[in-house]
Length: 301
Image (cartoon, rainbow, N blue to C red):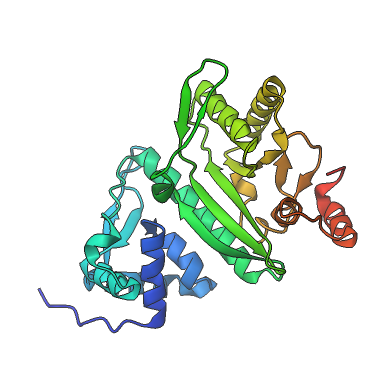
């Protein structure tokens, strides 16, 4: 078998490897959205990924099919040469990078990839925004080192859980707002999810942080909204820390600037830029807020 020629890494290749590491594995489709976004770049994307896999900068793993028919998507992680490149860039040893992703179960992988889609939409939107920028995104794996915990007053049991992510946005004037993130695919039983929602409401009494839920459909959104309102009433807590939207509404053009987020306890849908501005201590200027209501938010905030 002929030996493939050595790969001469470009700056885009370096950025691509950094993204694969930061996301703890992703699919070619996500890389294409980030680095090969033009309609005619599909072939170039696949060819480049193939070269990086052949050069052992990336490792490709065929995932199980979620339907039970055929094979699933190709999941990309860092290969041995890619880990060496990233270690040099970060100034650490390959061992300090941690273990490569071992995601295998179809439902776990599907959840991970959905998070990747939302995270990428947020990153691209923040890069384009004149109002906000993304300071950082903390993935679930890092948050798991210090899980959230609270004593549930309903039964006295300590509830522990790990959000799917945490991100910090900064406004143009330097003010920052952190929010927690949950990607719900409708697979968590209602009783278990209600306990987590109570936990968020209880924690907000000491440290109010908005929690963004991306859910599969309007029915799930309505159910979570009812649960939050019911638990907030029982606890005397503020339900407006929970913001909801459906997966089909999230993309880079909407995630920050479009009024797609339903605030529990409020009638209007708001944009994430409004959340960051309000929570950081100052509302959006009246003209800008009026413009958003005209774009389809409607009602009172």
